[in-house]
Length: 327
Image (cartoon, rainbow, N blue to C red; front, side):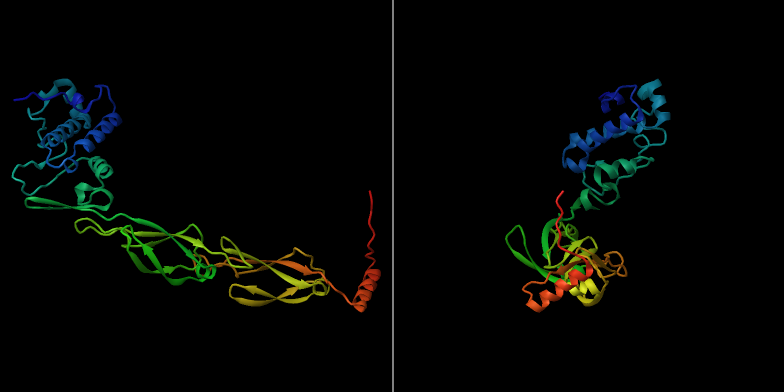
């Protein structure tokens, strides 16, 4: 019979190694020799059992203390404690089963779930890496793997993004085929956001679920409008007289024209805030951004003599002479 190797030697750690060092060493070796990544490799399977047995003892403070004092003699000669099984990890029924029958994996211990969830994506709970699943049966073990996700891009109109819509897009797959997909564009979406289409990615393996399709959005521009988050910016041109005397002017918004009041003496560059006339929030349809309208004053050109005379009288009356000052 081959003599058992020293547990510290099996894990490749010093006898003074702390708990984290031992756990780290075990993670690395368990991942390397795990039977599900070394199909049919009896040597790897044996090594996996060996490192698991060693970790089962060295990760338990009481068993480690006994091992440090008495070595393998502290146990029953097979590396198992009086409770049975490899250390505190219960029964490995199925490892070394040359008949290829029904496989079961039983683990106990507070940290085993975390270790194997981290390494193998819940492989011992019916799930494998990246959404894969294991079907265990008599004489077989089927690996079901979720399909890969696909990344693509889509350009939507300014108004389509602002109000939302249903849009049919053409997607060219890796095999050259073209697929038409109906996509819901949520109201308020902005450039850089992604739309997720579940199950429209690559097909799964052995009946695994398909991956998802992620469409990265670019919102097209709209003449006369600029978007910054949920707010919209535009401009309006008003007559000189309206700016001086006050009045009203029509302003174009995303939802149509509105009549805005212009105060007397409005200056060029003044901003008018239209509350709630911006983009809707994707998370709350009752919340909208604002629209900010920059006022531009129309300067009269090609005045007739009568109009020019009236303007000069206005200038004289208001005392706004065209004097230039030289420093």
